[in-house]
Image (tube, rainbow, N blue to C red; front, top):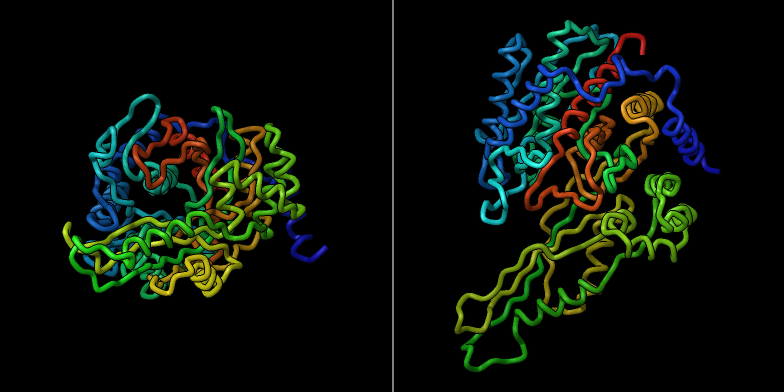
Length: 473
C-alpha cells in the first residue's frame, strides 16, 4: 500500500467513526432559536432579491447590504472591507477577532449568480418566494444560502461574546460563475491577500445527498474538476441560398457536434473518487451497490454500468465536454459564412488541457472546424485530508443526523476553492444543506432549497465553525 493509501485508510476511519472529542458546542437540536432563524432568513431574502447575475447584475449591492448588517450589529468599520476589480463587482471581507492562538479560518461564499430568464421560471427568479416547503429564487442553492448563513452566524457569535482562538474571516466574493477579470478571490489574492490569508478555508462544493426524503451522506469536497471552454468555428465564403452546396458551415459544425455527442472520455478513478465510491457502496441500498464497490477496485465494466445509471456518477468518473451555445448564419436567404459553438469541458485534475484538446480534434475529425481555447480556470491540488477537519465535519454531522456518514468527494463542477488551493490555502467544500440527488437545480429553472434544509444548514455551519475555532481544539 502506498503512503497515500495509508493516509486514506486513516482518513476514512475518521469519517466513519468520529473521534470522541469531536462534539458539538451546543445540543443536538437541528434548528437554531427563532430569532437567529429569522435573521438568517431576512439576510437570505435580501441577498436573493438583489440581481447579481454574472453578466447583467452587480455584486456591489450585496456586499454593501452585508456590510450594513454587520455595522448595525456592532462590527467596527475598520474590520469591514468592501472593494473589487470593478465598481459593480465589489467583494466583502469582514474579520471577527479571536485570541490569535492559531492562524485564521476563512469562510467563503460567492454572491454572483447564473443568469435567469423570468419567462422560463414558474416563479420570479429574483423574488424570494416560500411555498410548498421550499425557498425559491436564483441563488437559493448556489450560493447565497451559504453567504447569508456566514453573515447571520457571525453576527450571532458577536452577540454571544464568543471568543475564538483564531480570527474568523468571512469573504463574500464576486464573479465565481464566470471567472474572468473581476473574479473576487483572484483579485483579493493578488491585491489584498492579507485580508483573506488563512490556515484553511470552508467553501461551497460539498452538500448533503438525499434520496426519497432520506439523508444518504454529507459530502465533503476536497478536490474538483477544472474548466476549459472551446469555441468551435467553421468559416465559409457563403453565397445565395437558392444555390446550395454541400460545403455548408452549419452542416460541418452539426456533424462535428454529432460526433462529439457520441463520444465519451475514458472512465477512471483517482484517490478521491475511488474513496467516494467505496463509501457510497456501504450506503447504497439498490442493487447497483455491488458495482460501486467494484469501481474502487478498478472494474471498467462496473464503471460503465454506474456511468450509465447516473449523470452525476458519469461526470465523477470521466472528463466531460458538452456543447452549450450555438450561433450561425447571417441572413435567411444566404448560405452561412460562420457557424460556431461553445463547448464546455469539465476536466479531471489528472487530465491535461493539451490532452483534452487533441482528443476533441481527433473526435471531430474535420479540418474545417477550428478550435479556439477560451481560457481555463486555475487547477488546484487536492486539499490535505487533515484529521482535525475530518473529525469536526464528521462529528457535527453525526450529532445532527445520526447514522449519516461524511464522504469525501471530487466535485464535478468548479469553485473558487481551486484558486485558494493553488495559493496554498487548503479549502474544504462543506455546507450541511441537503438536496435530492435526482433534483439538483443549481444553474437551472426554479432553483430552490428546502426550508428545513436551510435552517438545518444554518445550525450545522454554526456548530462546525465554533468547533474549529474553539480554544483547546
